[in-house]
Image (cartoon, rainbow, N blue to C red; front, side):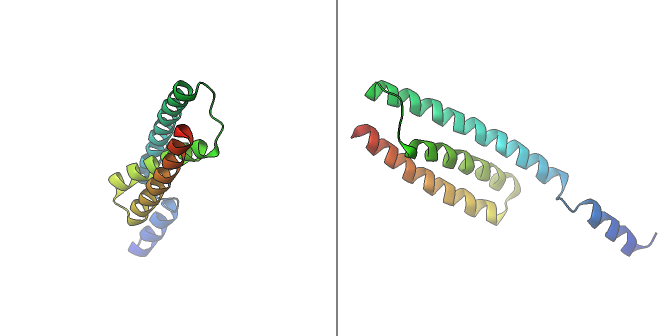
Length: 109
């Protein structure tokens, strides 16, 4: 087998990305889901204690999603050092901060 044939076969096998990147992405989503669940639980508890009623604002939902996505891309950025993941992490953390501020203002009144 010639060098070009081996390279062509290797490219074909690795079309979906390498195994390390796939494992890191899977772990990142697990980490993000765990962070989102913790944020959700903490906010529900604080909101219930402060106002004595369940949450009804959309900012809280968006805060959970942005927190989860920020955690996912932060994990990937740390492990893979990819510029795009770092950019996405920064953007999602910024959105998380905005929605957290909206949530806090809605709780305080």
